[in-house]
Image (cartoon, rainbow, N blue to C red; front, side):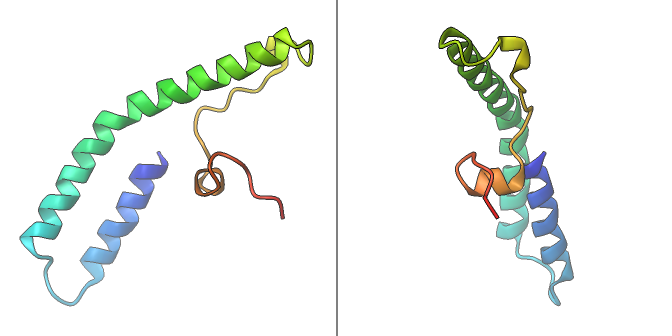
Amino acid sequence: SDLKERQARVWETIRAMDEPPLALVTNSMLRLADLIGKAEPILEASLLAANQLAASQLAAAGLAEPSEQPIPTALQPEQAANNGHAQNS
């Protein structure tokens, strides 16, 4: 997931430092890993439910058939940075 990828980058940065990390940093990163693990199923279920709701609303409005609606499983990093919207380039 995107959260785990970001956390991995932070770990890489911490390991690249000249001095060993403080216990507070290590403990915070371990707690973050635990929180991410608990949050991911909830976030995925919420995203799926929101996409299903949007698809059914479009279908009810006659704008599209439910089977035509793509249901992404996760936000891409650029979407997460833009409140769920892809950035127009």
